[in-house]
Length: 116
Image (cartoon, rainbow, N blue to C red; front, side, top):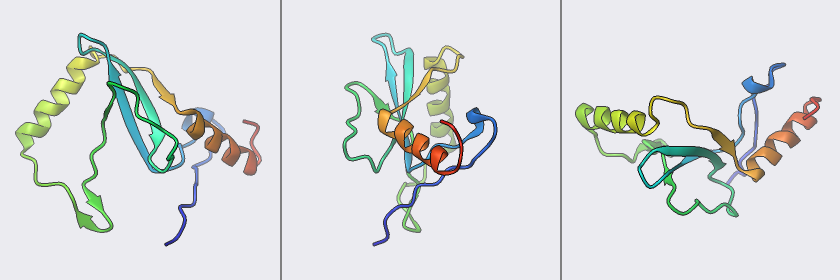
């Protein structure tokens, strides 16, 4: 078993610097189903607990070189996309990184000579 090695794509424009880790998004919605925020987290962070009421957005299709998701009809994919879009009211929800993910990113930036 090899330990995961965190990496980032560097850029002089900090908004373009990638986020390290095996990432997942937890989406939180209000009682009316409207999206409140998206929380980006590292699946390898064993201290992270998905907030109550939040839903993971990304679904693995392939793991260890093998397909793990059954075939999904295109109509179902389209319906899921429309539902997600409707829940955002056409606006991009705020995206926040977990504290651990922010810290990992900051450490990698400093390691590579950037002031974080």
